[in-house]
Image 1 (tube, rainbow, N blue to C red):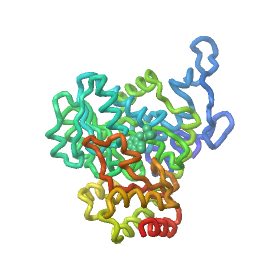
Image 2 (image 1 turned 60 degrees about the horizontal axis):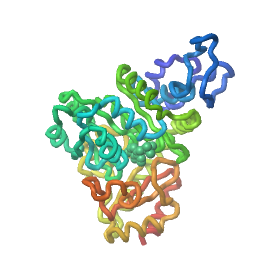
Image 3 (image 1 turned 90 degrees about the vertical axis):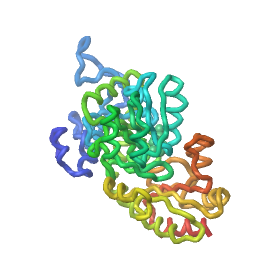
Length: 388
Ligand code: PLP
């Protein structure tokens, strides 16, 4: 594949793009892995005489560029940008798209950190917002205001695994002259391609499935068109919340195996869903792959498979939920998700504590699993013991 132009990868399969896009062997040494360019600045051959376009690593760094080109290739966008975290990406995208007086529509079960950014940071700065049931397109259409500039979508949502219809929301956003931003963290580009369904921007916590090994915090924004990509890139440089070269390298290394990991995450999750659905201590299982999930049809239409995240509710309320979290061992008690190792957590007390007493509060009897890629027998035995 060496020597293929950047655009040539557009027609290759997902795994080929994950491994090669933006990652040509190093022109100086032939190194197959993209080098970690751990440098802040670049020697200039005379004032303004840049050797390869790089002048200062906040503006651009070759390791970050490799990741950014790969991200754009995976999501089918014109421009990818890598940030220090998803919240840094979200802040940069929202301040690119909104000014004081504008309005944002966001899901009433958005990731708590996204809600906090909008409700407690951007709102202070004069941006208005309202939270709606994003899985109900009619409610979204009714909630649009003349000053709505962004429709913010997460699908599946964290931790309730609701599904929003990206194509339907794209039509609503276009009619309203608003931009549709999709947080694709839970699905990853392997399972869902929001830009092909009409999204203007995709954001990711690359901390999760893209990185895949629970060893890096990072974020990404991918713009459908080059002009918007350039505006976000301007804000990325102006605001400065960029990914460092080593973090970019770790995410890129994780991305190479995204496809094979996601296949195993999905297979394991399906077996765990089957086990939990039949368990007497469990009152409901939240998983878009279940035919009884309220938006299963939409999920089946826009996702390749249904992902590695599973939430469930327990007969014994909060106490039972906390106990399961404490008794599991192979499932490590911890926040975050999307790594090779299985994690268990209590959203009400942990990841979603920031939305307590708000309209986004999550049920106290809810447990969330990030199903890893360990042997399924060990995962099932661990849950069986914790639920006994
Ligand atoms: N979006 C979703 C769906 C998330 O689950 C998270 C973190 O859990 C974030 C955004 C924020 O990610 P980060 O911690 O990389 O800023």
